[in-house]
Length: 230
Image (cartoon, rainbow, N blue to C red; front, top):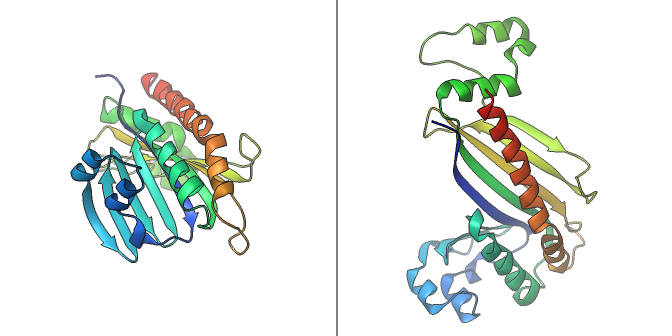
């Protein structure tokens, strides 16, 4: 069994000051952001002054007072891009947004548990941990230790903008050969105490959305190549 990318999702994250109460499938439909058919099929989980969470038109929405997350499968990433641009570039331009994230997450089946373990050793050599690393490496049986989470951060960003580009790698929980690879493109739209509105944030998303998603895909492809070579 070869390497399989089992899941590939993208999301836009906006950090600012928001009113979760207005975020609802019916509000999206009222503003022509989703169709009546999508409204009928929407699934509302929570609608509260502190939290709104629902699925609509292939997208997931989670809105807190300080954070908005809109996500979908990567092959429909244009839906999220258009939704963020419509909401915060046209309807709620007054909402202060001082930071954004362009995120992409992969779940990858390595083919065998041995390959997953070898990837962990490649990324975080146990020999670097001295005698304790030797103890970890010598463990026998079905239960064993090793790399649990690895974070790599790029500063300055590849495009020179303020913020960072980060990858988190960790074993998955649903399968013995699964890994999860999460990318976060962090971008600064202003200072919390002085930012005015959301237009700077939406401009950043327009400028960086495709480039940063492509960067995440490029790095994930390199990880897949490493696994295939193990």
